Image 1 (cartoon, rainbow, N blue to C red):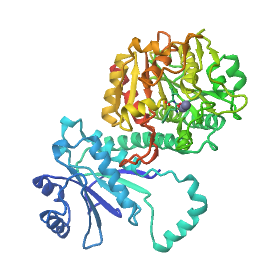
Image 2 (cartoon, rainbow, N blue to C red):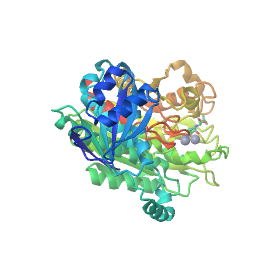
Image 3 (tube, rainbow, N blue to C red):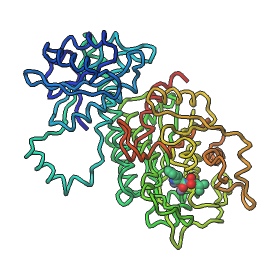
Length: 513
Ligand code: BES
Ligand code: ZN
Ligand code: ZN
């Protein structure tokens, strides 16, 4: 990830290859904002504004060159009263992407003057600077692990010949004095969160031949060592002795052994509120014997996005020293068809005595999450939060712009709702009315693992609910938001790392609940 530092000053005082200025629509404000620029640049810009080539609306972007060779990038942020964190995140992402096309290494981004930030939109110096740094970092993300080796050398050579440089440094500059400490803190925290998002995206984008359950566990372990988290990895024998029957059943058809990963932050702080996160770690979901159609099946390498997010959140929680006891549980396997695979009609009996008829082996996520939810109860948590790319039904209901939220803990649900609005990783609640439960009725077992076409995201959640006991619980179905088929300003196509910013924000505000 690129480096980011804070600075106090204006373009003439700060050294950078490109200076980015965010400009609102209102002309009186534009004048104020542009006052620190050199006269010739200002007059060129005013000509552009007078001609209507640049208005300041959010799509507008303009390059300018000063007499001394300074390069300026002007990015519109729309009407002042409507600027919120998301507008700033997108504007910053747009700026860094535009600069990637130039040959620039050091890029300075200038904060809007503090008195312009609309308090009504939840903005103050800290939230606004956080949004800009976040948008810049996330907008620069690329998954090119497999492109570097072969083409990288050629690319670097070509770049050298062209004299093209890559962005290596960001400077967030403020024209207001007295914010140096806040700025430093914001940059530090945002760097930590963005690194966690990068990690979740990298894990999600990595193909299933690279991320097997064992490799996922090894990655989690090495990150745990690096960031001082406790880690335990259960291998197949231990999974058997813990009677994790769902995980073993789904793993039956696989050539790779399953793993159950346990990460702990503040393990010894028994007085802190204890929250257990559970992440679905299906490293590839072929559907098993109920095999999926081949079109787009490759996307199912991302079926461990819930696990990737839990790893990212644990990493960030440790580095940010969040005053909570946080436990991350990841059941991991792939879901493959073979002569030994789980079959439709098979019955699994879980360690809590609940028997499940497997009607469809493609509804494997809930089967492995059930073991993790049962395991979570031993921590007597204040709340269990699970994240899973669980149902196609949730994708149909909410698409890519909102995560489905279901559960029993009203306080945590509203905390997540607020965090979703702040981070723009929005969540929408679906009900878990008990009337839906009859869709899970089985003739031969206590329940079956699918509830028919209607309300598929809800019946999946109600299946999970059978395994949380009396513990407060929230389920996040990230099937539509974790794997993107279209890029946004700062969310590239592929794994989005959704849930990392949402949960870090929610957990940082935990005291409110
Ligand atoms: N991993 C899938 C859900 C999924 C679908 C995630 C599309 C992302 C995009 C899950 O394991 C699954 O296959 N669910 C089935 C359940 C059905 C058989 C009840 C589904 O949603 O089709
Ligand atoms: Zn499936
Ligand atoms: Zn799946």
